[in-house]
Image (tube, rainbow, N blue to C red; front, side, top):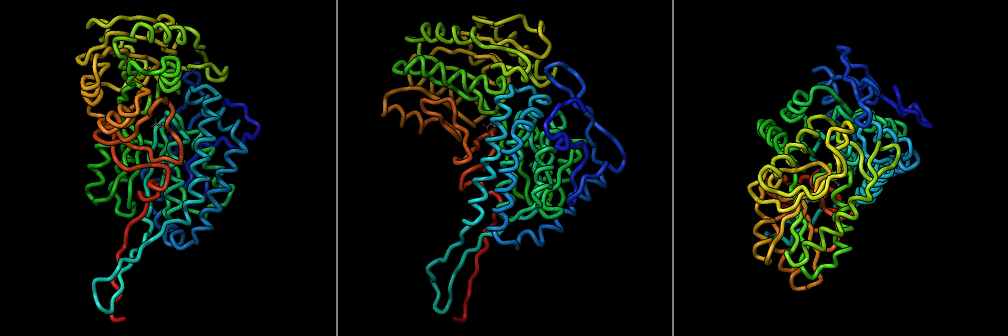
Amino acid sequence: MKIALRDSSLLRTNLYIDGEWRVPKDGRRIPVYDPASGAWIAEIAHASERDIEDAIQAAYRSWQSWKNTLAKDRGKLLRQWGEAMLQHKEDLGMIITREQGKPLREAVGEIIYAAQYLLFYAEEAVRTYGDIIPTPFEGARLLVLKQPVGPVGIITPWNFPVAMFVRKAAAALAAGCTCVIKPDERTPLSAYAVMELAHRVGFPAGVINMLTGDPPQIGEMLASDARIRKISFTGSTATGRLLMQWAAKVPKPVTLELGGNAPFIVFDDADIPSAVEGLIASKFRNSGQTCICVNRVFVHRHIAADFKKALEAKLEALQIGPGVQNPDVGPLIDDKAFEKVEHLVDDAVQRGAELSCQLFEPHSRGLFYPPTIIAEVQPEMDIFRTEIFGPVISLIPFDDDAQVLHMANDTEYGLAAYFYTNNPRRIWTVTEALEYGMVGINTGRISTPHAPFGGIKASGFGREGSKYGIEEYLVTKYLNWSGL
Ligand code: SIN
């Protein structure tokens, strides 16, 4: 294992099942690489079918007692887990940077972001209130109880290897559910390190289990097993559809946080420096590899030239390099991601878009794709319709509100949208017209555990964070208490 840490016992490479670290039953392992250098870092466990079965059974068995624990005691464990993450944030951030590539500052930021979900849901655990309904019947009382849905299968991606699983697990555990978690096999080490902290704070055996292995096998087993009562997934729309099909066999509820194609609209009354700042913050976070990253930048024709000039100046100042050097932009996750971004830029340029700024030659620096601006993008180009997941800004001019709203909504996705204007009337009309689950108004930063994160259309359904997030893990039971 090649990561220097203050606490090297955080580096775990085996499966976490029923309260203990286990080697996979058939001994198989998966290599993990550093995307900045291509170097091998570690080998992690590849779960066999029996391991997956053990994890499901452990989550099911432990749920029988976890659901009956006091909410305040569940909250206490969540708080301790969050505090342990904050104490180890430098080590955990370093692990993320080495396996995922993001700048160290952002990686430590991800740990703080994830820990905040635990601290938030530690408080929320005690607020899963039910209801009393005014009775329509003599001698009867109608009541509503909120109860945990049951063991949850949690499947999360490589772009936020800690925050995405923690925000699901925090809400699920607070509600009284147990979990089987599958992080992405490209970035498992930070998830296992955070799992080690959960072990240290003393969650009962079986309440949280973690596996890596063959994604379709684990996904299908979790989704189609009747002991797992809910699936929560963040990742591609294609995988989300598959999980829904498998879950339909039981059937069971799913929460899906899928792809995005975020518009960023700059109206002609906007403050240009502040819009440029918001765009850079959103677009280059995690080198452009977030589901809520700006994907299409619509700029009013009157200000398009000034906006592009200000943007180019900012782009040219960006530092690019390995995440451990704390640059602004790091590498992409793998070759496939690089080829996708390259195709989208080439396709746009071949179809008439203008390559207005590109910091260096693609392919000259391994998996580092150069921050790029392309202008005059049109709806028929692939880059208009596809989630870029890379450091590329595509500029599209517009002439009026109706035209830009039509283009902004002209996508199968509906996760995040952003716009900049100083006109209060327009703020309302545009907000109401945008077909998206989240809207940033005069800001490029929208993520926080205090607000509901999630999308509509092909971006999925269900919400994470805030009081809405815990509802995903609760079922509603109605009681008719008669004979009174
Ligand atoms: C994502 O990319 O799906 C998550 C981004 C966030 O939570 O801010």
